[in-house]
Amino acid sequence: MRAERTVKPKFIFVTGGVVSSLGKGLAAATIGALLEARGLKITMLKLDPYINVDPGTMNPFQHGEVFVTDDGAETDLDLGHYERYVSSRMGKKNNCTTGKIYHSVITKERRGDYLGGTIQVIPHITDEIKRVIYTAAQGYDLAIVEVGGTVGDIESLPFLEAIRQVRTDRGKENVLYVHVTLVPYIGTAGELKTKPTQHSVKELRSIGIQPDVLLCRCDRPLPKDIKAKIALFCNVTEDAVITARDVEQIYELPLVFHQEGLDDKIMESLNIWAGEPRLDAWAEVVEKWKNPVGEVTIAIVGKYVNLRESYKSLNEALTHGGIGHSVRVLHRYVDSEEVERQGAEALLKGADGILVPGGFGSRGVEGKIAAAKYARENRLPYFGICLGMQVAVVEFARNVCGLPAATSRELDAGSECAVIDLMPDQRGVVEKGATMRLGAYPCRLSEKSLARKAYGVPEVSERHRHRYEFNNEFREALTARGLRITGLSPDGRLVEIVEIQDHPWFLGCQFHPEFQSRPMAPHPLFLDFIGAAHAVSRGQVAT
Image 1 (cartoon, one colour):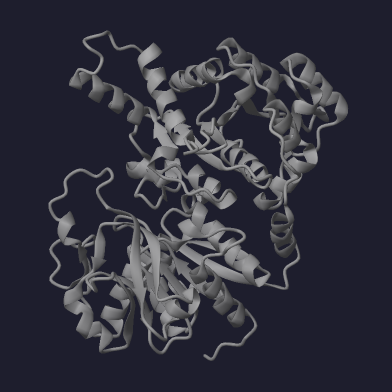
Image 2 (image 1 turned 90 degrees about the vertical axis):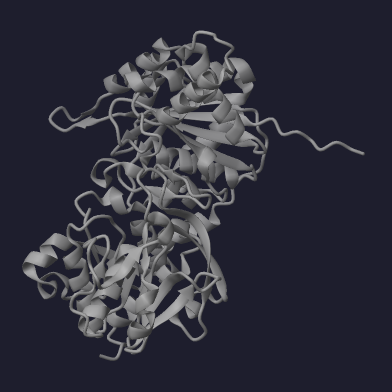
């Protein structure tokens, strides 16, 4: 019997220098898209230096969105970029933090795995980091590994040392280092400055890593003489200095980087032979975004609107829905606390659709409830996600079903009219980390519902992240007044989707559909929601 060929993966490590927020995640995802378009089987991994085990308990204002995978991992938002750019699905093995690494090593030490040896950063911590990298890469042609933080940070040093060792372990022909850096334009001098990049590369080289490719973030194309200067002082070839200029739409990046020759350079350096990338689908996405046939305004009524990264996947899913209809989606961010102070009419008037996203805690919830009421009474398309569904149920119970005390157990622990309640298996939970209903669960859809029409299939799988659920004690009272339960768990116990019977488009879902939306494959609910909003913008919906 012929043995199966064992794939020996190659590795690309993406680091960043000078300042944070240079776009390492997008750069890594774009590289993945380009190489996948050449026929390679790609996976991706994010290494985060913070000591939290995962970002699940971190403040959205500080860290941004928590991205949830099918297998229930709470991960860094960059994994959302990865899934939107490459076809491989991410999971628990694709995001690793310092906290996870140390937890694993300490657990092994307590168990006696090290036979009483002295546990040190080198080799034990670095070996554990390499084990995580190699495990994630199994079965793939290429693993793209992003190291979070900025070169020079103390907390990222073990990760950098580990990836330095990988080249020794696997051979230089199988490892490539890509460094994302900054080339600022100083307006008063009228010059692009290369010194920040030089210092960043110097810092990286001081710990034993010579970058092979430099992605230079800038607001304009790099002239040839600037590229030559960077190449000379950073010890790379001139064709390895890539202009990573600002773009209007992030889905242009595969096209821009290909024009810069990035994927050709990577293929040459790693000695990979494949055909030219097929980028037609990316070009079509960009074309539809740049030349829309119309536009819609979506009011996003949230608690974290001052940091747009808190709703990263949501924002992108709305954009995808617009691309699916060849319309531009204008995002109007509305602070739900301001809705409480100023009223829904003042802040939501003129919107073609209203979206209320997820969130935790009582702050600003009454503003979200007011937004749901405004959408229901004014017959505007309403899309409620997670908490957005729950507030829609509370609003309906209060103002349609005559239950003025209706609320969520999250808002009032002692309420006798909690139409949203803790899941039974959550009532004894004390620890906060990774204890919610997390990951993908099946959902059965009712016939002749908005959801069934949008999906086109009787059963779907969607990702969850919540502790509270629709209280089944109130099913009969609410459905009797026109609330439709159109999505249920297969056993019929958990309410997943609600709609309003006599409304043009009103849907709330307990799950997070934004996590599965892609630029070339918009999520069905977002696609349908934007379609309904577009009809409003054209005056085609009955009032």
